[in-house]
Length: 570
Ligand SMILES: Nc1nc2c(ncn2[C@@H]2O[C@H](COP(=O)(O)OP(=O)(O)OP(=O)(O)O)[C@@H](O)[C@H]2O)c(=O)[nH]1
Ligand SMILES: [Mg+2]
Image 1 (cartoon, helix red, strand yellow):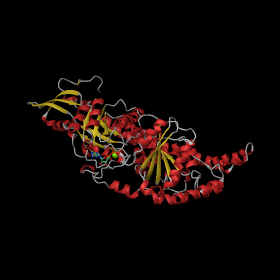
Image 2 (cartoon, helix red, strand yellow; image 1 turned 60 degrees about the vertical axis):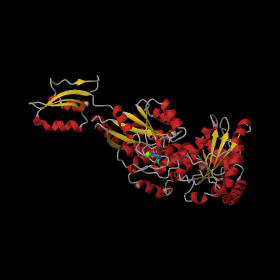
Image 3 (cartoon, rainbow, N blue to C red; image 1 turned 180 degrees about the horizontal axis):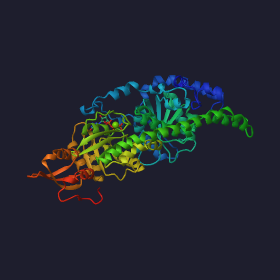
Image 4 (cartoon, rainbow, N blue to C red; image 1 turned 30 degrees about the vertical axis):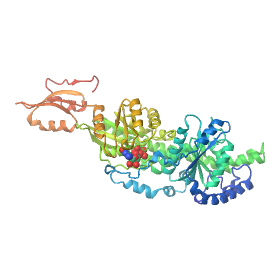
């Protein structure tokens, strides 16, 4: 078994119960009995060694495993036996000249690269479950997806994205399969026959993990693992792993850990469970209860309790961190500084755009989920109105609900914004599905009513046909390139027109002695419509935000009543 040397670092709760050493102790999940599974393991190790020599030539190919019930698709799939993974994943498009000057020093990036995949080892080892779910240890993976509906291109695309995700998590993708099947098999997801084919490929290629392009029910994962005999990870687990690697701030880390635990809880595959299955098979009937309860069950119960305690603690921690952010937000609100949120699919170029619009120097990486911690910077419109611009975590199709939940407080800031810049990678062949995936998440956090500008980024690499298609569908778009700076001025102008402007009109007469009032007006984003120097002082016609209007009452001509353009704006 190829991953034994890693997993043996930590004692197992039984999730790794495919390993021979666990099987000796616990009786194993392999219901076919100890000898058979040990034999299988030996066979696999031998097969893996042999396969390793042959792998290089074969890697990167996708095969289609067609369901016998779909003869036409079978032929179709055969004809389309072209590579899904051959062409490098668009998500990690072939940009090697990644950084522009606006990206600033990429210290974080260097740090991230130098730290890759080592992080898990620094976890305190006392909490077994914690270590185990952090160390997914995906290294040599085979991908498998189900093609249930829609065009095959979509299934292929999804698998390519999964490949990019797997690579972002630090693993090497050996091969990918798409299976045509109308509904998932409740027991093994792919059906036992196809699962067996995957097992063969895994053994041939010497893979240590199968990554499935969907979220699996805990029982499906177990069923599939029992057949393919290596670790099975689903899309959700993979995304959670990437988030865990990339989280940086205390809050981000806590949020990811909470999401991981939530995901882990129903998936604990404990000693107790396999014991009872084993005992059930051997002793049968009434005997099963006695033999299987006891230490196994206690252990898994203990893990569950420990996880629940930890989750409660994390929730409290996250709630505790919220006030600081809320205070900041309230402060912005009080000063009526408009806020603009940058949202969009992962790797669309959100951080690059923030860097281009301000000089934030935020880390940009050609990887999925480079940014997890939101950055907020101050920006100014061409005519001098200040606003805040925030970068956020990227979205992806099937973003795990556990993550949306855990990151709710972060995402709510998007819902709170006055304007969303929805950044789209226009160089992608089919950005529409990304746009709708982003909107789904936005709706989940009640941000779908915030005005939105579709920012078609990467036009320097985009296909005109794709760009035209989206422009026809979306009412408000702007074409930009965060790299070349194309369209950025137009975007600035559009932001300026879309954020709430100062809207209280005042006629002022400011005595010359009160010169600070004039500078105050400039600082506070007032729009000065006219200025006239009279004998008594400066007469000005201005538009200001309500908070400033209150401060200026004593200089208002004709008394204390200020005209408000919009009813209720105060
Ligand atoms: N050609 C081209 N590449 C771009 C442009 N903008 C961004 N990129 C590249 O796209 C990749 C992703 O950019 P980021 O700014 O990190 O994307 P992001 O949306 O912040 O990604 P996450 O934080 O991972 O969600 C990087 O390799 C950038 O250099 C652009 O206008 N043109
Ligand atoms: Mg980013």
